[in-house]
Image 1 (cartoon, rainbow, N blue to C red):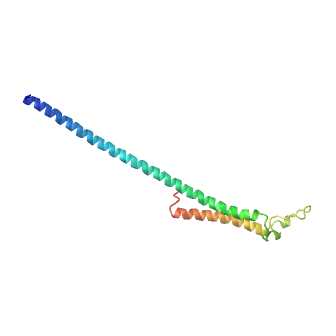
Image 2 (image 1 turned 180 degrees about the vertical axis):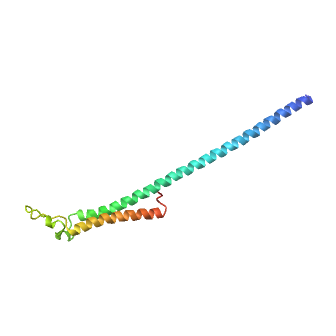
Image 3 (image 1 turned 60 degrees about the vertical axis):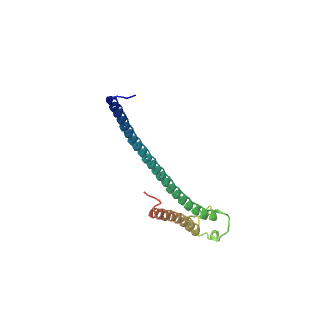
Length: 142
């Protein structure tokens, strides 16, 4: 059972080399785990950034639909067969262009044109103003 001094030195050297290799392996594994954690954090940031871009795009689409719906509400109100007083005003820009064979030809009245242009310009102005406001508050990033 007694081993020689030389055998003990060899065993000690083998244990030391294995301990050194295990420590190096542990350091390497810790660096791999740290790299995996960093990669996971980077991927989570990319996903969050993509979600933020999608949410900003959604807000923009919702605002665009809001202004289209507002214009559609006005157009729908004037497109119904309701009497609002505007239909009695027949003077319009096309009165001088009445054809002689159609004396009852009435083009759009000035009030109808004001509603059409007012709705169009108001909706466009509101949409642009909303986009500028959303850009100012950081929702849109060009």
